[in-house]
Amino acid sequence: MKKKIWIITLFPQMFESFIDVGVVGRYFDGVNAEIECLYLGDFSPKSFKGADGAPYGGGPGMVMRADVLEGAIKKVFSNYSDPSNLEVIYTAPRGEELTNKMSRKLASDFTAAKGKDFVFICGRYEGIDERFIEQYVTRIISIGDFVLSGGELAVMTIIDSFSRFIDGVLGNSESFEDDSFEEGLIEGPSYTRPEIFNGVKVPDVLLSGNHKLINEYRVKKKLEFTKKLRPDLYALYENNRGKK
Image (cartoon, rainbow, N blue to C red; front, side):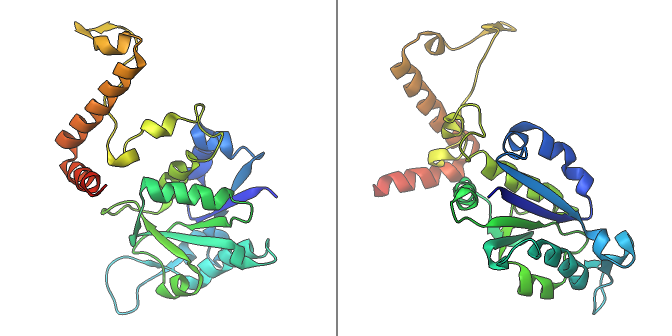
């Protein structure tokens, strides 16, 4: 059975190019899996304007209505004999932080033989009614300690991040192995043509053809970059290495 991701949003048009191009488009091409966006306004008696309401107790902004969101999630559920086979994900600052480790696990969970399909809820305004979260959301994920105007960009980030770990998505299956945060380090410098740019030459070791020296150079640069640019990660790396 084809795997599927559902996205409940007030702005489905934001996902059109995202779905069609890049690593996401390569996998979610309708053959391996598919993404379907549900426009939340279709489940509101007043379309777009009826999807939210003023917060009880007063305060600024608006809150997305639980009953409207419920209409959308029930539409998703109607496609499954057992809705418990869905992971309903909401993005919010209070959620567990997205990391490479989590992305690997999401990819594994999604592609497993009995893996769950994913449903992403894109919040807007001041968030969504807590009752909907309590009754329907199974997981909350944060992409960092900052606030966006809506959950759409966060959802794209999560999907793009875990899609890279799905077999066949990247042109080279080893591409992600040297990425930042693998092994607790950030990625070192990269070079390509021309060999000399504005008087600066590509490091000789990368032109040597000696793979052992090249690998040693790259490891060294990873350590240098991490120590200089992300001392917090470097300290954690050194601490973990000392425990081995």
